Image (spheres, rainbow, N blue to C red):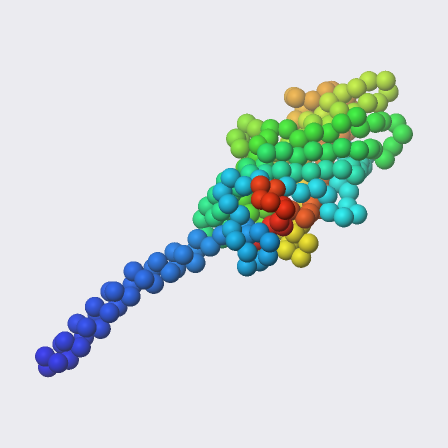
Length: 225
């Protein structure tokens, strides 16, 4: 009987010793980096690193502003990696800027003089499920753009915002794809002609890539693991 009791105690002791090691292993697995550089098995993108991308090859920004459509042939975004990972399967970013240029409307009745991102930096997260989500850093400072439009001899500004926007990441060409992201006119912050022209909504679509870590020599491509 004593022999069996000793064996049971020994087995229980082994389980107790193994438990911390198992927990540590699980914790290590949960805290694996989401963003890596160079290749899918490459080193983690460091906290504080700057990442950036222009439009992917042969891509344009496609927007609608009310009933008009618009295209931009040049656009970039930049972000700082805040924590990689911030939790299991998730990295956090600060989207510090987005530029849009060489833009035009598909009508001769109006000219899109400029369009700029507002309320940056935006808060961002990237998940191991290949989803990038962007939100305003504060509720009072949502994701948005400012469009300056000239028509009928007048120039007016339209402000479009959204609580969030989301894109899909892909490792094949290290891209981020945004499709028909919807924004609404902030009428109180916009010119009355925006509402008068029926330009109360906007959409945004673009493919950016390759995404690169520009804080590292040779600017290696960024992969989502």
